[in-house]
Image 1: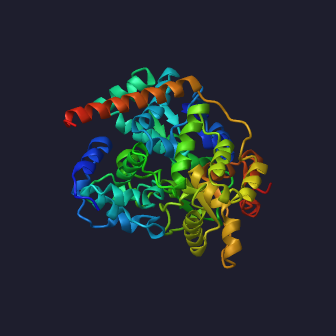
Image 2: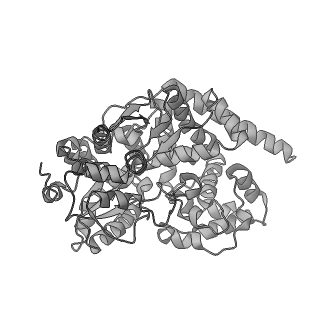
Image 3: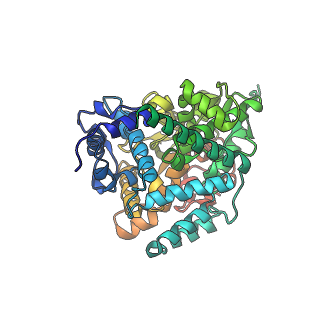
Length: 192
Length: 295
């Protein structure tokens, strides 16, 4: 790994509003994590890597893309660290820096999900599923039968229902502009 | 004496218009019967669910704030949000609005200042706070005696308690209390607040099936006849994965997964066809027969 650096923990503290440096590795987050046993890293290891500024280890593993966001870690942390918030922040950093691993299907789902909401104002599930399957031809047949059953039960709609589309587009544009503005002023302040 | 009508804004969210239509159907039907007048927020926009908070924190906080501001336009002070994932996003937004800088940024994004004050009810809250345990008991005409239930809260109704304001996130009891008020036998079990993995439903089937199986197996092991839940993602996941689990494990026993709103509907005497049971994957009919509500 690269030389330890405080930069990552600092970014997380500013953007996610939580101090990862207070983690003392009690591993309550890991003990309660529903996906740790299926993943390559566990939440306490993620916290350690954040403290060391070791983004390489984090983006080289699948864990942050397997986190279900169940908030058990955040709820149980004796230091009051928003562990799930740190993981969300690491996903955002990975995307911004172009460091999303190839084998992270959840990252595709999140991206397509955001596109769908921006386009229709609401989630258009059949379109989301179809577009996701196009990114993963090898798994295209998984759950097809289940999808058909759900369609027959009236649980999937062929047409989208529309929200206030002009407002969602405006909100997304504005939010992205303000966040970029904040990051620029934070960099100037840090003297980069 | 006729109960006075209470008016609530209603934010269904995307799931209730698709995979969780039966939640929308049963929620509307039971609310009307219990003197709650629901008005859907006009042109509502998605709450941002899992995607926005892993993409843009400001947008994720602004989307629910935009809807809360519209509730004040409607002249109402409470919004019913039956989807647990939407509820969680709304509560995060409410807590983000307490920060002055964030509040200013949110105002810029939504194009107006939201002054706060709108209460957010999840599905359990609507029955627990707006109707009340005693009133629900008084309105029960089809007591569920003989039916054994486990109450499944999942993740987002209670966690993290700093934002959801849940009294006891590790051992919530409001849904248990409501089920007892309808004379169901409520069993203790170990998976009340465990995650079913629903957000990974499309991309990590093996993990989702493993998590789902643990929850359902514990429910049947303690002797439950049904799992009662209050989240459309949990219900969709727990109900639709059972064929797959049963195909791989002959010892697995299937169990119906009902929404709290459906159970309330049955207990207060609504016709089962108004409660969306035909949309279930695991048949609910045997259970309904035992409750004296055969279709």
